[in-house]
Length: 264
Ligand SMILES: Nc1ncnc2c1ncn2[C@@H]1O[C@H](COP(=O)(O)OP(=O)(O)OP(=O)(O)O)[C@@H](O)[C@H]1O
Ligand SMILES: [Mg+2]
Image (cartoon, rainbow, N blue to C red; front, side, top):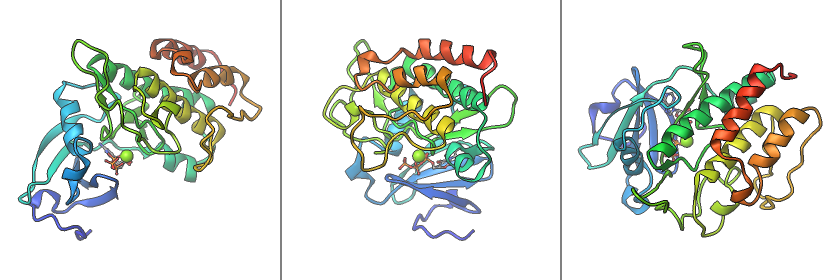
C-alpha cells in the first residue's frame, strides 16, 4: 500500500497502515508494527509514543504483551516505536464480524489480559485503556489466547510510592473509561480492573455496558443468561475503585470459571 502520511523515513517502506489514533499512525512492516507520532506530538506529551517507550524502558515483558523491539526518531524528529506483529484479530473485529464468542473463550481472553496487567502493575505501569481495540485474540501458540497493546496513555507509578503520574488526566476511550477517569482523581490498579470488566462484559453480552453518551456508570444493566459471570462483572464494574476486586482475585475467579464448565 502506498504511504499516505508525510514521514520522510524509510522505516515505513513496504508497510501497510493499520490505523491512526490520537497520537499518530500505526503501520505493519513485515514482522513489526511501527507507531509513528503525529506532527504535533509535542502538544500531547508525555502521552503517546514517548509514554509507550517509557513503559517498555521499565523492562515490561510478558507472553500476553506485544513484545517491544526498538524505538527511534524520523528525520523530522518524530518518535516511533516498534513491537513484534501479533497474528490474530482484535476483540472488536471478532465481536463485529465473527460468530458469538463462547463464554469460555471470553474468560480465557480476559485471563490473558489480566495476567498482562499484573505484569505491568508489578513494574509500576497502569495501562488505563483496556478496551476491545487494544486486545488481540490469538490462536497460537496454544495457551496464550490474548495480547494487550497500546500503552499510549499508561500511568506510571513513581518508584517507592503509589502516586500515578497521570493523576489529573481525564482520558481513556470514553466508552470504557472508569468513573475515576472522568474526574480529577488518582488512577490505581483498580482502574485497569474496571477496563477488564468492560472488556469481559463486551465479550459476554456482545455489546458495551454503556452508550457512548451515557455517563451514568452506576446503572449497568445485566442481561439474563450468565449468572456465574454477572457477580464477577458487577464487582469489577463497581463505581467505587475500593469496591472492585484485586487483579489477583479476578485472576482466581476467571481461572475457576475457565476450569469449571461455563455455559456458552
Ligand atoms: N503488535 C501488534 N501486532 C498486531 N497488531 C497490532 C500490534 N500493535 C497494534 N496493533 C493493531 O494496530 C491498532 C492500533 O494500534 P494502537 O492501539 O497501538 O494505536 P492507536 O490506538 O491507533 O493509537 P493511540 O491509542 O496511540 O492513539 C490496534 O488496535 C491493533 O489492531
Ligand atoms: Mg489503540
